[in-house]
Image 1: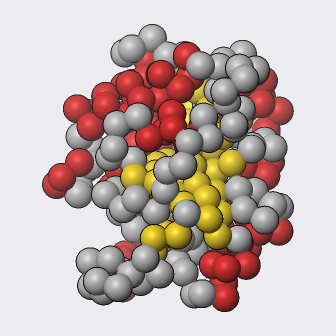
Image 2: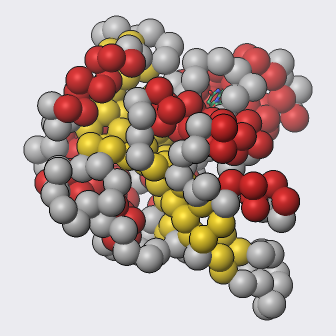
Length: 240
Ligand code: UDP
């Protein structure tokens, strides 16, 4: 592996909103192309990339439940939304000649492979970007938790949490509190003790128990994914 690479195998968590652009809803192909270009540059460096996509740009189970749906049923709709996002991202990556495989946690054999851990690792070793779709396949979980779970399963060196317009973890909401300060480094325990909401608690505890570093950074700044994998100071690193 190349000497200037800090993280050789990463899980990139892309929220649904990261694929929606300014409207915040639906799929925005030009935005996808930009993300794909960033990923191609990192992939060309030899970094093994697996992506967990969210679905919040289309549907969130919690919202459906608030409107009177059964929660589990609403969550399955959310999982399907993540699969639409995954196929869109695959299209953007393959249009610039990056080899990819989509693996779904809910079988959908006509459009993607089922999730098979060993096969996913093999794809990474063969320089294919793997896109994990469908979340964990179970309701009541999130794609943040999926990212932590898959990171542990494939032995990823870090989880890259690309955020929309937020460049790291702050002591308070910087939009509401002018005294808010950004942290460069935190431990997993700091997140709990300081009550900082980087991921949901299930995702957070899974990352802590398995000692997986998390880097929170602004996805909208060009070149940031490359900076993270090459170990340059960007965003907030949570480890230890
Ligand atoms: N979801 C689920 N189980 C999972 C992952 C996701 O039920 O393991 C559902 C859940 O309803 C969630 C929706 O899929 O609201 C979209 O995922 P998420 O909210 O994590 O997407 P993001 O906020 O990252 O766009």
